[in-house]
Amino acid sequence: MRRYLALTKCAFLTGMVWRAHFIFTLISNLAYIVILYFLWKSIYGVSQTLNGMTFNQVFVYMTVTSSIFVLFKTWLEWQVSRDIISGAITTQLTKPLDHQLMVLSHAFGRTLNNALVITLPALAVLFGIFRASIPVGWNVLFFCLSLPLACLLSLVIDYIIGLTSFYTESLWGISTTKEIIVLVLSGGLVPLGFFPEVMRNILSYLPFQAIYHTPASILTDASLSLADYTSMLGVQAAWVIVLLVISRLFFSQAVKAVTINGG
Amino acid sequence: MAIIGVKNLSKHFKVLNRHEGLLGAARDLFSTDYRLVKAVDDISFQIEPGEIVGYIGPNGAGKSTTIKMMTGILKPTEGKIEVNGNVPFKNRQKNAQNMGVIFGQRTQLWWDLPVIESFKLLKEIYRVDQETYDHQMGMFNELADLKALYPQTVRSLSLGQRMLCDITASFLHNPKIVFLDEPTIGLDISIKARIRELIKELNRTHNTTIILTTHDIGDVEALCSRIIIIDQGHILYDGDIKRVNQLFGAYRTLRVQVRPYKGEQTIDQVRQTLVERYGEDRDFTVRSREMGWINITFRQDEMPLLEVLNYAMSRLPIRDVQIVELALEGVIRRIYEGALQ
Image (cartoon, rainbow over all chains, first blue to last red; front, top):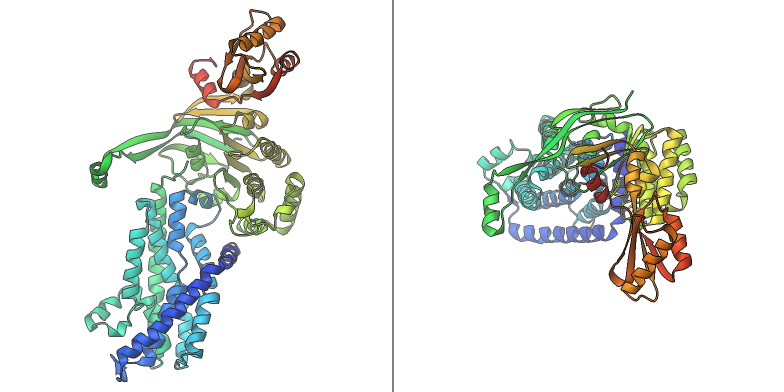
């Protein structure tokens, strides 16, 4: 375990080197929150609630999902893909480390970077300037439990996408497709509460809603029962386990087919 | 007891035959027209603990493929490998614990961080205890004078400095086997010499087994007592370097620039000078090359290189000298021609 934490530390230190990257991501994320505010303000107009959600709920929900989106943006699949295509993966495979855990702990270091320099300032703006309010109760505790699971889920999906480079030797198309699918189907673009009933039912069986919708709706909705919270976390945990297993099988299969580039 | 055993090892790749042009590219999308490339074809050898073995061959001979199989990255198509009692592909992580690997064109160091952070990370990865770590770092500092580099970021190091760090880093956990794939590629003579010294010393102090692949005959001559020559996936020669040394050393070429250069007249002057010293019947040639360079090729055992050089310098108005490095390709050609039989 210490070995992987040491990797996380190095990734975190590396992340801190890219100051310009963080400044610009922070600015663009804040701009996005401002846009969200005025967009949803105008959508609501004079109405108090739409689809059972108040303006404040939607605004907090959207700000939380967009902040989580930036938080989980570790470029993991690009890293994995670049390592595979350039052949740098050979050096990694000569270390006594599990590839999946190595990649995940590396990405986790990046997540810490994001949390520190992007997500926390964004939340400060949300509550400090826009005076958004959230109900405080069990929901905050369950949000804190739900977030790491969501993070793991997002990283494992990215890992699987990155591994496809073993076969395709290119990532652009598949990564942008994934990005759109995840963003729309997870509530990252529009709250899932705005989707038709049938669609919501289908989505509840897919892993994507567990990334953004679950933590965001837990935080904004204090009316849920403890049983609701635990079942939501249960679904997240189940998907994490399923995808971890799938990605491990995929890796052990893909690495057999490997023809490592560059001599 | 051999530390590495390779038996009837083969690795075949399936490669898509690409077609030319737009139409060809479209066809390739659906093509199942593969050809089989035998990167390594039925090789066997054994390596004893503490040996430094030169594993050499031209580009595309199958060297790196063999190394990748011994390190457990690639799965052999056929045959057996045992490294340190493990089957590398099945026990990649366990095998890696006792192994250091350098791929000369890549680095295991963290590009954006100070050098010392990479060493600290490797300490954790290989579970090196503090005492061993301090001892090893002290030794590296003595051998390669690395301390000044520790606070620098890896991206700011020169290629030679980075290679010194990379090589010492691969010895940090005191591995039983170290694979060095082209460790001196792209480096200048003085840093090459330092790296060879370092490798030799590390091998001596810990009895580390070292497999060295290289294009540079100088590396092999300086470090290895045994070489394995591979070409097109087959082993051409496996044994003592001395026998092959005769091949390497058989002909040397000395390049000189004589001023003033008067074409044929100067060539004759050089030939005449050498005939005066060595007589008519010696096997040497003098040829003119571009830019007024003259190549003198001779047999090393009849005319020692240094002697020829000193003699020529004392008798001819020589302005500049070069000693031509031996080309591996020439050696391999001679082996094919039966020079070792």
